[in-house]
Structure formats: structure tokens, C-alpha cells
Image (cartoon, rainbow, N blue to C red):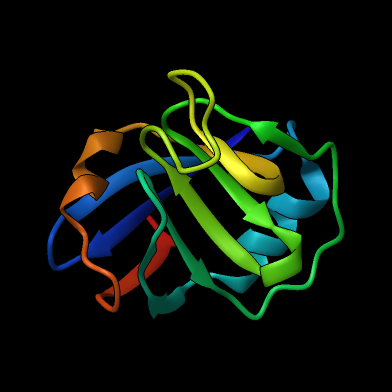
Length: 127
């Protein structure tokens, strides 16, 4: 089952996404229970990430992800949105700095996050 969410920054407006409870259920539940989440954007290549107060261990973690994937980064308690190549990429796919728990997908245009600026306010909420 997918939970619809929306992600907002001044640069992107609202971008639609979904939390996929079947992929990494513990991580998905932790994210859902923490909504709404507000933080400040950090950029790393074509990845947006930001700090959360969520504590979740690795769960079916992976480093290579797809464009549009949303992951949780356990070491930094981070929410990550992948929209293209990162400095760790070796091919055309995004690659996380270290393993992330993929728990969702952007259903809108993931490339919209290319407009974001580090330090910009970001909010994730249920749709």
C-alpha cells in the first residue's frame, strides 16, 4: 500500500510522492509517524537530503538507487531524494554516500529538485 505525500520548497512548489510500505516497512512506518517533517535542504550532486529526528537502523539498505527514489540515511538520520547523479555515481544512476533504506518514490517530476538551494526550507506532509 502506498501513502501519498507532498514535498514543498519555495523553489519547487509541491512535488507529489508516495511512501511504499511494502519495500522497507519499519522505515516507512517511522517516516509516516514523523510527518509532517520540516528541515533545511542540503545538496550533494543531484540529491537533496535533510536531517530528521527519526532513528531507524538499516533495513534492506542499498547504495545504488533509481532516479526518483526516496531513502532514509541511518548514519545522518537523513531523508534523501535522488534525482540524478551524485558524486559517488559511477554510471548514470544515483548512488548514495553510504547505504540508505529506500522507502518511497517521487510520483511527480524528480528533476524539479534541481532548482533547490542548500539552506532552503523543506516540508514533507501527508497529501
